[in-house]
Length: 158
Image (tube, rainbow, N blue to C red):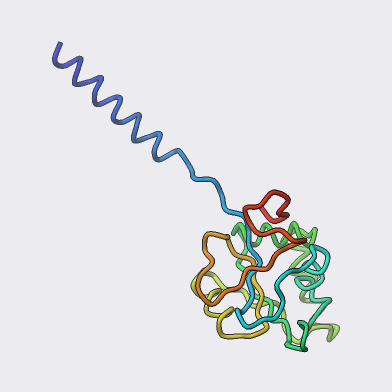
């Protein structure tokens, strides 16, 4: 009887641990972040698309836009590709052609970590990036998209 009780206790403990491991927290929305000194507070989804497509190259006041993106396979990159309605291959070809034609001096800067992205946003006044909303740090300003912040109903970047 004691062995059966111990087996049940262990089994329930293992099951409880397994549920803890398998239970994944909800994913945060993807925030659009800029340098805290950027005067922009909100942006339309359409203008956001133009910025990340390299069609709009300056912010209000003339500061040059510096695109900072995460590498392939990240949630931020997936959100970027959805925003631009491109797949990874088309995105790479798009920027290669844009630079080759002289329509852009350089492609977006690809940074592999949230910490590096934060440093770029803090360092470059015109920097803009997509990051998971729960990764926003001091020195970053979150832009409203079509008057919505991450986590609000109607926010377009998930």
